[in-house]
Image (cartoon, rainbow, N blue to C red):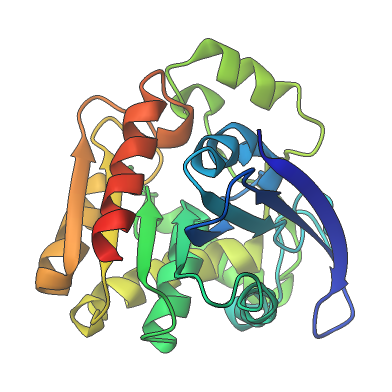
Length: 277
């Protein structure tokens, strides 16, 4: 069993933030810093964190601003640099945990976008980086008129709250996981006009920077993901070169860590991390 603890901290602009830590019963062999996806929170990774902890992996995470128990307008950040400052501060504090142990960083979906952006600007800080279904492009092509309208709206009303249009049935093939998501009051379906536009633009920018990867990177994606594009992950991996390992999970949906075969995913990650030690 993992020992779970929670804490509050303040972002650079004074926004109250929520963090959580899962400590193994045994001496930790490594530390994983986890960044969650859009509309959810760190608590949704409880089962995953407990599994890793049973193998001696200590897991730390926090709720992004506008998510979970952290403050801020739901689904909104003034810009990506604001979220990156939050992540930078959190990871700085996390680096003080088991300082003599190797640290990895893991990001899912939106968290994957944020994680690879952070890793590209902080090379060499982590033993390895893991991306789960990163958001470089949506799995569907948004109508051009809607993208243009979004850019116009965000210029005059950046905080306008919109539906993120995530089909919950596309998250996982596990019905119990879907029901848990639906009944969780900390989840939300909001995204602001400005942040939504910037998320699309940031994904395109990161695809163009893939060749800059010079650190161990594991990219995982389900080829039945109807939310984020697994083909974009394959393009990124090809451009990233030999440092990148691409794992496509056959018939898996968006949330690899909530699929019926999730333990296969966990074990694959653990084996990859151990090889990087």
